View (cartoon, rainbow, N blue to C red):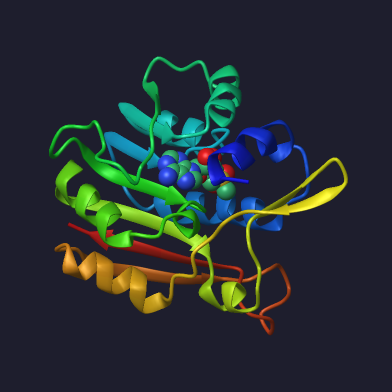
Length: 207
Ligand SMILES: C[S@@+](CC[C@H](N)C(=O)[O-])C[C@H]1O[C@@H](n2cnc3c(N)ncnc32)[C@H](O)[C@@H]1O
């Protein structure tokens, strides 16, 4: 099953089934991004809007992009906000956003489905203002090495999505190559379990 089709099918249960990765990232995004101020935001892979409303409350405008029409439908039904523009688009193709639009780009749990990180950071650099920040939070590569992939249950079957393993160096080198500097790295563990591999890795890159 292609990634887009899988998310179309997952959309109905995405918010309602247990998902430690989703829940931890929600906390991490709020913890990190509360330290920053931003007016115009681009959210890559907004899904059902877990972070979109929170971003919209703190900014003038959010362009929330996703290529799954079903995920967007749920986000749109939950969040009828005048300062959010939902965009149905594939982020691995040129973004329909003007140069220097944003002060913040947010990308949560999406880059594991993108093979070419270089393109994402190149478009990120183009669409950010000088001094703009790019927040990335993904399943930690250590988890990926252990075989963990985005997955959901459909009619009693476990569906694993197509993913790419991105090493720590892949994120950092793709960002540096496109002109970013690295401001922050975080590694995030399941509650009361800092002896197992971390679940998430986060970055703040600065233009
Ligand atoms: C695991 S969900 C994360 C959603 C949300 N960011 C969150 O943290 O709950 C990944 C999202 O990325 C979207 N996605 C994956 N590949 C994409 C692509 N190439 N272009 C646009 N959206 C994509 C999927 O449709 C899905 O909604």
